[in-house]
Image (cartoon, rainbow, N blue to C red; front, side, top):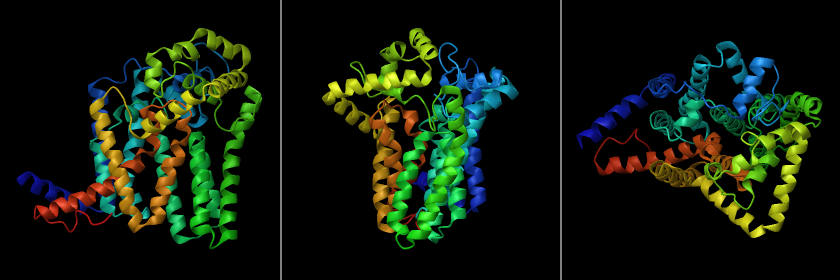
Length: 436
């Protein structure tokens, strides 16, 4: 009981802080924990080099976005350009050894920490009380479930999560004030365009959220909303156009997103495929199919060109799907399941993930009663972002950009449950939580 009262008193002091101080504390705790582990375990020594980093190394050394595979294969659109350019700048400025690796990990940790620090600011815009955001931010900062993703910097996931959080925050505010103007559409479209240059997986989220906005609020001012949406699309197109023009010149096709869908489909859909990427890696599918690990495949990329190679991969995957419809349906169903309820080599963490996802569902149900628009916005984001993973293999990193939504919704339920528990214990509950 004493421990419970001490925790309650500490929470009340934390909640009484001004928002900027609470966010700064969350950021500091998050960064201190992550960088302490990076330094203590020398995680910046002997880095792995995957496609993103190989492309970034090419930028640092030669000034070209190229060579993501086992051997030099020429210009690439296997990875989106924004994060590759960012990493390339780090390697160019700080070197490709331990110091460059340390800076890369520091930046990834900072992106994750800013994400958690902003949750108390974002939560009121999404129909939740500030204390829900405080709880979520503190939980994410001190109890990270996907620590390696947040500190590795190998991929763009922490930056995509932060970008999506800012975009959804801005959209929620726009929906609430109902001011749909061409200027607002252009500004938000620039944000979407920048985010899409980091991760094209956000494109289904944009279309789903735009359609939802029309259904929920745009019908009252259809002309204004359609102008707003058209400005969004125009700005996105202008942001992606230079990338598409570069790909037309370098690869022979105006690719607005990434070129590797065919490769991912072939690895994910074949006789030996598992729904889980780590299992496919362990079972040798990457050594069999992926030009990062298979010399013959890498030589084929170099000989055919990246676009033709991925087209061939997609044809092979499509043929397998047509001739194995039952097995494909099984794989798709398993992938959908594991998106929400992951299975990894850490069963204890997986069990916590299951509890968090269940709490997320309960939290969204609570939010639905208080603010149906915000609940629908978050649900649509979760479903649209994860839809592609019914087609391709999954791993815990892939869902990370929307994990902040799951954490925030789960915190709705956690705050509600803690209020009920505190009432049973006769503790002060007025600031622990009510409703969402």
